Amino acid sequence: MTRKTNGFTDPIEEHRALLETESRIAIAGHPLHAMLVAFPIALTMSVLGADLLYWWTADGFWARVAGWAAFGAFIMGVIAGVTGTVELLVVRGIRNRSASWTHFILAVMLLSLIGANWGFRIGQPEEAVLPLGLSLSLVAAGLTAVTGWHGGKLVFDYQIGTKMPDPPP
Image (tube, rainbow, N blue to C red; front, side, top):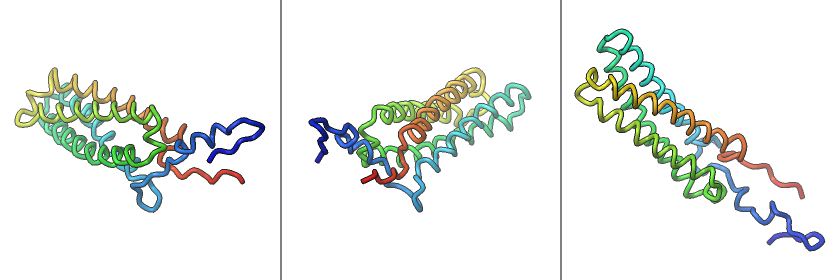
């Protein structure tokens, strides 16, 4: 029930559902999604780095590294994505923010791109790097930056995944 003061309702009280932002999938209060996303982010950037090193050195080792990094980025991205999706669907304060849905859509696009990059490399790691593999890696790295920025905005600006302090009496 919202409190009325002098005929006005408190907008914060009106939107109590936006205040419920604490993570439901956490270990000792630490959101699992926030802990897991570091792996696909680092591995996606590693794919780009390995592709650039292959382009520079023509050493097949770097093409294989890029393929394995793409595989790891995809698998860890799926795991992080599942935890993030459950949080989005279960926690009302996350679900009610349009910024959460923007982050979700960008993350699904990114995961699709990483999966395609990995799939393209299976069985032909050296042939896959230039030009398509490197191009996919560049786009994935850029999309990772944008998606990560949106995720950081959710945490730092909207306190998503954190426990909000109790309102003063």
